[in-house]
Length: 404
Image 1 (cartoon, rainbow, N blue to C red):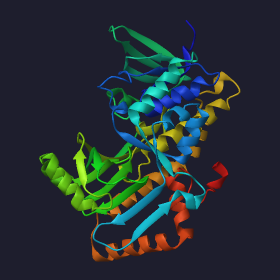
Image 2: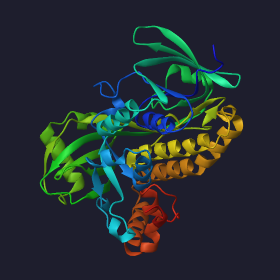
Image 3: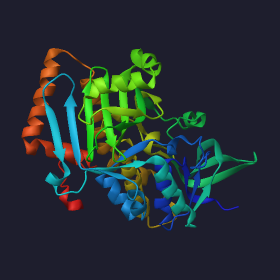
Image 4: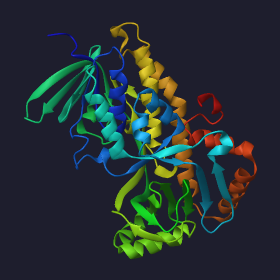
């Protein structure tokens, strides 16, 4: 038996894990992807009918992977962004054309993205795709990891890899044995997610409206439909879930207003508790966390998947720079990756957490500061550029034009 079965094992085949597998399939490294549920199964939570907002940087990376053209064929561009604070003065309006771009990003269905990712994986031979496969255990060994996997017939096999990339949003029991330190904080809020049919066309506007119970985000999908994420407090959750469709539409309308005319129809409503979660270190031994395995964010800025894709892009560059297989998963290499991702993680975690906390607080001085900030951003383009850069997936003062 060889010392290693593969160079890299990817544990979890959701959006980020499948992207990592496709990226590695385009290198000389041997890899395997383990996932418990097929991407097209109804029980697969990563590829349901939710949507994600893909930033400009994510578009560029997916294009380099060779799958953007297929994704964008059914995606909706975000050409304008409208930010407001309900009941208070101050509105920020952003237009992609002001930044020499056709769009800030695109809204895409996760089921569509999953189909494209796994369609591309089916055409390659460098990365083995083992689905369904249940991870029973994962432990560090000398210069590698051992992963105990159970297939659909109940047969178990131990795989040895130089590096295990954990890309699971859920926290399996075996993750505790790897001794990662996870920090978490509840926002005491719930996200209510559904599609909404509108009286008027969205004209490719995305909306973020801050309300007394939390933000209300609307992302453009079809011509007169929006994907809605309404944040409510835990105390309000049961009241909202107990409403009829007509009552829900009325409540959403009261929070948003009539910029899109009347809300005419509501799709299936799903609810998700909101927490902040991140790890003190991205790796332990030869196990490395990426995507939602290392950070769970408030959806206030829609940055979760974009941050995960930047994990994939940086890790791909780090692993591809190896001159020998023996360098894969070494302490030096993983410390290099962690140092490259540290500032981006801290920036996005701090920004989303600060926004979530700021717009939960209603004292008059805070309200006045928010209104003044919105006025300033709307009137002074120089102050908007850092905000736009982050929205497009770049560092606040990084030149966006270099990426066009």
